[in-house]
Image 1 (tube, rainbow, N blue to C red):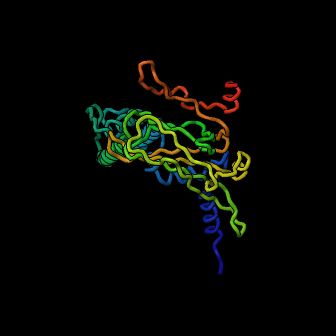
Image 2 (tube, one colour):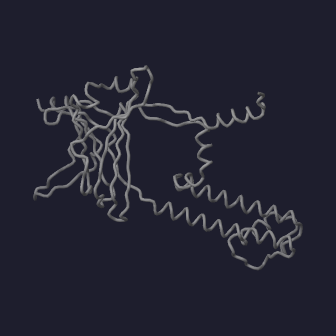
Image 3 (cartoon, rainbow, N blue to C red):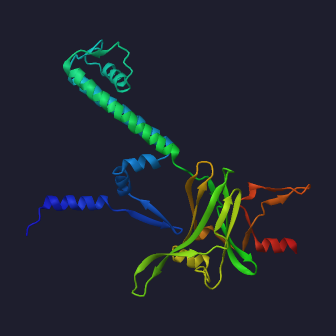
Length: 311
């Protein structure tokens, strides 16, 4: 059976475009390569919802200018078909296209041939659909619930109740209530099966408290590293060797908009500080009131330094 070479080359080219290159750095996956952008452009709706606002406005502006340029060329192809526009002037027909697409219609320039009226009809339909699509995208971006939750830049492993404990901080920057907040922590690392195959395995790390009825200010998450913990006996070197990372997932209901929101953070092996503890951020005033000082939210000190200072 003969297989056409052209079809084979097209298939190989599509396969190269669909490749996703993954780099592992400090236990975190990084997706690189043109194939990634190729897949993004194949899903423009997802791209326009997830791209940052400056990129969103830039894409909208490029699409708007390109659309008017295409219709301006269509008007030029019809010859002298727009009244009061200089024959052959791209700028005149371009701005006439802008007026038509936005339904402005100053009246200074108007179509004077059946060809121009046909192009105007098509452009008016494109303008109506474009406004509807842009309005829907802008509304979807504004109405999407987002969490302003901050995680400490580092996680510490320090004794708690006589046992080594993994700790990290999280805080709600909006100062509103996140109801029924739930936090889950996972250890992701490379492992070898009994058959000798490399796999990326996920282990859940149990927290002392993974639920909060109302997450308002800060939350200190703690995982006891005992014999049942997947971190038991691990060191920074062993975590780096297995490309390990700790993934934190937090979800809850935003009291303001009554919608479910999500936040996540990843700690690499180099983000774990062994035999450190967080700087205390809870303080008490002279009149008995308590307050939180977020200036030291990310700070941690070595236990050796503390013992040395005390001595």
